Image 1 (spheres, rainbow, N blue to C red):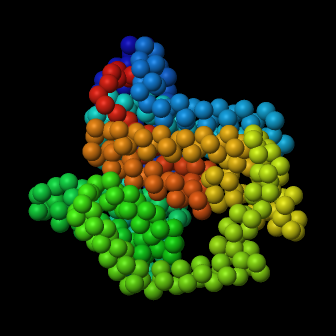
Image 2 (cartoon, rainbow, N blue to C red):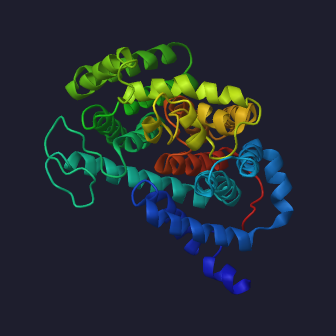
Image 3 (tube, one colour):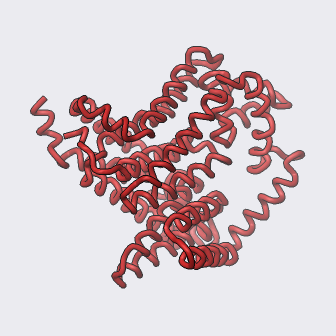
Length: 410
């Protein structure tokens, strides 16, 4: 045991490196982030001191809700009609709830590890941001897109939706840094970063989700950070910035115009992006109505929804997920799953509002709002890169939001 503790070191050492690796790699090289997470979980398992469990769990309701959510997923695997492959997929996807619990326990009270993890995520987003801009003129070997020129999508890792979800929150971070410093050079740096991040969403990506979530994240931040005249001035500034971003981007305007057309034609074309979602929203409540309390069981959506599509060959187009996290939990875990998810979101808002840490308060409130709205038209806790982003960043910000308390991990 002592040799293991010495290997990981106190207040840093290899553990600090692992947290830096995890928070830099999950936005960039996703498979390698799993290795860093594995070693963190091993370290946590060996180094936890049980005496502090009750204290931290009592002080952090988010931990209870995350544990309860995974318990529901686990229990649902015993009565589901789904195949073992779908069950295992859900158990592995939602295992991030437990990973988040462990990360909160490890990071609570460890301000140095919190700073390292946060700065690693910021560094990763800078790398993605600069790569996105360089993509306009250069073919980067690590970039997903290989298409030069302005007015095209230039996402670097994953897909444009997941990149823009993270970039929207990174814009909030840059905005927060801008307002929190009085040093002129730092204001110029973070203000310029925020502008570059906004333009990467509005002009260098074909997605609509990014701008919507950017507006949500900034709105949540502005509402919590300001009062009185400052609030109205900040709201006006936000509207002007987003209005300019939208008004100057023909790419984004075309995408929103297309969304309107797809919505109007959803009855005759349910394979389009908007039509697909609207059809999911139409048929999934019928599945939920069959077993409204406990749902059909873990992974059941993937097979049971096929009974409700109009044509059998449509099953493969509509059975991955319903593009709505609430409906997804409702189909598999009924009202119990939906209520627990609502409580989870509420517990995050509560942790933010009660936090004595201004940075954590504002950023946690913002990312929770982003998760809430994203859950209305995506399944962010099921999608791989999005689920890691939300699980790990929420864990970090929840740990940062705590009042000073004993460390669980020494």
